Each structure stands twice: as C-alpha cells, then as structure tokens.
Image (cartoon, rainbow, N blue to C red; front, side, top):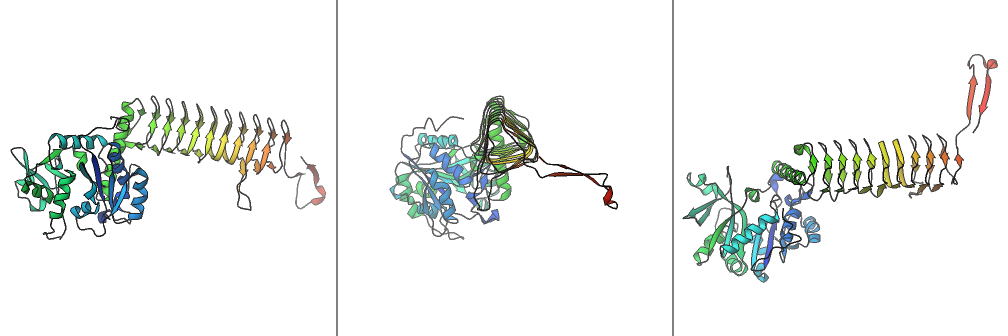
Amino acid sequence: MTNLKANKPSFSLELNVIVLAAGKGTRMSSPLPKVAHPVAGTPMIQRVVRQAKDIGAKEVRVVVGYGEALIRQLVEPLGGICKVQTSQQGTADAVRSAQPQDLTGMVLILNGDHPLITAEDLVGIVKDFEQGSYDVAVVSSILNQPKSYGRIVRSGGELQAIVEAKDASHETLKIQEVNTGIYVARAEVLNQLLPKIKSNNAQGEYYLTDIIELCKQDGGSVGAVKAPKRVSFGVNNQQELAQSTRILYRRKAKQLMDDGVVIVDPANTYIDESVEIGQASVIYPNVMIRGNTKIAPYCVVESSCVISSAQLDEGVIVKAMSHLENCIIRERAELGPYARIRPESEVGKEARIGNFVELKKVKFGEGSKAGHLTYLGDAEIGKNVNIGCGTITCNYAADKKKYRTEIGDGSFIGSDSQFVAPIKIGKNAIIGSGSTITKDVPDNALAVARGKQVVKENYKPSSPSNLKTTSLEN
C-alpha cells in the first residue's frame, strides 16, 4: 500500500471529516459501545479516525453519545475532536451535532463502524468527488447480495435517487449498487441543506439520505461515487465483528508474505496491522502477534505463541507455547517452549531461556542460560551465567516492596536455589544446589546454605539400639 503518512495526498479544497459514532449498537448484545469493539486488536473507531488523519484531514470530528467517556479516551489521543449528540434522532441529526457551520472546503462523512475502509479508499472517494465537480455525493459499492442496503437508482448513468430496501419495488431490489452510508459534500452546501431535512417518516428521525433529493431540488450537482465493496461493510453484530477481524488478519498476512515473510498457514495466524516483521522470518500457525511488536529478519516463531509489543532482534527463535510481552530479545537468543517473558525484561544475545522459565523486569545477560522451571524477577543476570533448574529470586518482601537480585558474569547457580533479595552474587561465584542465599557472595566464592543432613544407617524403628548415626553438615 502507498505510504500516505509520508506522502499526504493533495486536494483542491480543504478536507474535514465527520465520523458518526454515537450509537450503542444494540445488536452487539454488549455493554461496550459498538465502535469501541476491537477488530484485529484495534477498536474500530480508532481504525476509522486513523485512516482519516492519514489522508491529511484538517479536522476529524467524532460524534459521540453512548459511552462518550470511553470513546473520548480512544479518539482524542489520535487528534479526534469529540462532539456530543444529546439525543439520537437520525444520521442528519448526528451530522448537525458535529457543528459543521465553521467548516470549510469539503466534508467527508464516515461511519465509525466501518473498520475495513483504508486511507487509499478515502483518497479515491475524495478525488472522484472533486473530479465530478459535485456539490453532494453518496458513496456506493457493488454487492453480489445487497440484502437490506439502500439501492442507488441511476438514469443514463446519473444518480436519480436512493431507495431504501423496504420501500423498493421488485425491480429496484435487483439493483446491486448500494448506499454505503458515506457522503461527501461541499461545506457550504452541507450547511445550507442540513436545516431543510425533516423528520417526516415513521421513525420521526432526520435521515442524511434526504440531502441528495434536497440538493437536486436546489439545482445542485449530485453523484454516486463508487468504492470497493469493503467500504460498505459495517459491523452490526458479533458475527460481523468476527468476520471483519478475520478479513483484516488475512490482509495483514498477505502484506507480510508479499514482503518476504514465511507464514505457514495465513488462515490461522493473527497479526495486528501495527506489527513489523522482517524478511525470511517464519511464523507458524496459531500465533498471535500484537501491538507494537517488531521482529527482525531470520526469526522463527513456533506454534501457539503470543507476542505483545516485543522487540525480537535478528535470528531469534521462539519455541511453541511461549508468551512475550513488552520485552526485548537480542540476536540469536532462544526461548521456550513454554517460556514467559514479562514486561521490562531484556534477554541478551545468544542467551537461552528454556521451558517453564519466567522473567519479570530482568536483564538476562549475553550467553547466559536458564534451562527450565525457574522464576527470575527484578534481577540483573550477567554474561555466561548458568541458572540451574528450580531457581527462584525471592523479590517480594513482607513490607510489600520489590527488591533486586544481581548475579555476576560467569557464575554457576546450582539447582533449587533461592535468592532472598536484595542480594548481590559476584562474578564467577558458585552457589551449591538447594541453597537459600540471604547474604551477598563475593567474586570467585562458593556459597552453600543448606540444613544439616542426618543419615541413620540400618534404621529399624523397633530396634533403636541398633542405630548408627552419621552427621553431615555443610
């Protein structure tokens, strides 16, 4: 796709965008506002606002109503300007709620529940509007199964009317060109016509579709601008939400494969649009990669991994069932299977994190290894350290504070060791297996902290006089 962020399109007139997002979405059967539902990891309203910003709109006004506080949190950080529709009385009332009186140039009116629309689609719509020299235009699409969409009726190729499906004749229902619910208008024409829209219908609502007939009556130029069918796709229920998510995941997988990423099974791979993956990396099935993840070339991510906002440098291998979040994995490190790397952790170059190992706020040094069944939290592990099975950093104290553990380069940590933080282990130190270390250990030292071992030879509970006891104490 064209990089519109780097190369903003130029239009003959200033462009402003109004996004309609005030509805609850009753058919979603959810307390969440419809437009806040995530599609492929991103709330659909954010997708629409970002596309509008990407094409260089001067202002993006978002009409809010149900769930206003939440929608504000989603769109205002993106530059969206929220306008409240106090009572929902139809699409024209929603547009009036955006207070378009002070807008100039062109106004593009979008729906917040159309997550498949792209910036390229929007550019094409506005360009066609300009080329047609229209005052008002509706955006249409050709659908094989138009169902309940309003039909675009033309005569001699020119737009004559928009007919709702419930009002259409049998012949009109055969028309496959439909109203997407998206409009473009010159700002001054929009402001002239909005007050003329009446609520003379069974629902008592103000319909934006009426603006086409009103414009014609005033002698204005109207048209229907054709766009790809994805532009018409609106989410109204959970099934359509899942369908749009599936489409966007497939779209992302195709883009990555076109760029040289090996995706074994695109139909069962779930990668957010924000993710970057380098050439010759291999992604196996049932993987979910989310957020601001960046994966360098020549990486391998095996099946059933979840990676969220992580950085994987070149040649990293993530084995099956591993979970990575807000972490950095350096070159040629190997993780898993069943590894969990929690936020603020960094795994060094050529390090090895094995099965059932968990890191949390850990800097794990180059060439170091933790093979299995280990928890390391709030720790700094030096280079070429060997962490034995069952090692635990006891970082959470009775005072409800977290304390750090430091282990120096080249140290050897025996299995089943515990470190009661805060504590420092020097370079090239050796910790005996089964030790609970509570004091600092200097460089090149051996530390063993075990209870006394008692061996009772020839032990027979019924004959205590036959016992021979040997005491071994470390």
